[in-house]
Figure: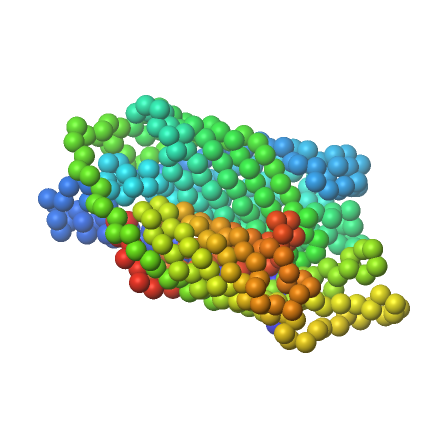
Length: 416
């Protein structure tokens, strides 16, 4: 059976392959649009602005663990980190329908290097990620408030080891998920150069695929420059007249998702938890009828089925052996209902969910669950699904790695 590291590598490669192909399709559409129909208006333009960015992010590390508070080989708190980011992105032509609908959306691929205060026990990881951002508020033609999210994988960590790295109770694997959100001001210095500065939030963890999984969280600043390779002077001003954006056809679509993953499990024995040996399989499905309110938002409900091989396993606390026992299959399966909401952008859809299992045999399957998911567009109606399930707002549950298809999809696409 493949290790968790190998499976995570496969997922990263799939997303990395899909996103450059989307860039190629967008660029091909732009060239086709320019060459075949020179009379097309700016509103329908699919021309791209290509961008290179560099930023530095000094951050403060939240002391959420005794290791970070000073229980390490250096006997010093680990409080600070710094990272450098090199990014490529593309943006649709200003004043086009795509630009106006998605508020100057840009998306791309980034590479970053991190330095912590403790290289010997944490390492100096490198992150590879996809990212997307857009405008929140434009103050004047040159200054705007923007957001950006990053999602990818970080490599080169020094994980916990009972002999060689026993104090590190934060990071349990060499490869960890990298999740970042930042809010920043963008000031246009010239036709080519933008100056960016803002605040930055980052989370590293392995998604409960290996113990320990305390994770590492930071908050800090970001400052950087963006070089717009082919931005024209006309992009810096608004036209006197803009035709209205085509009316959105409101409709109900149906997302069907199949997912699977693996997880680790801590089992209560007496007053404490011990780690059950090995990894446990997880498989499930989501069926989501969603009402599409507009270009950027859809909401609905989801029928959620899951099989969790780790659910309701137990140990005999009165026995001296370390054996764990599995219950009948019906105690490891559940069917739930959840409310869902999604924020829709070109190529990426970010979704959240809140629900509970309605058919189950109790134990680990009781209570509420929460879902955070990213859908990466592959074709007009198919997508890769990367999600995480949390129980009762605080207990890590499992990853949701899968594929999906959207039926009855009437969503207009100007970005393809």
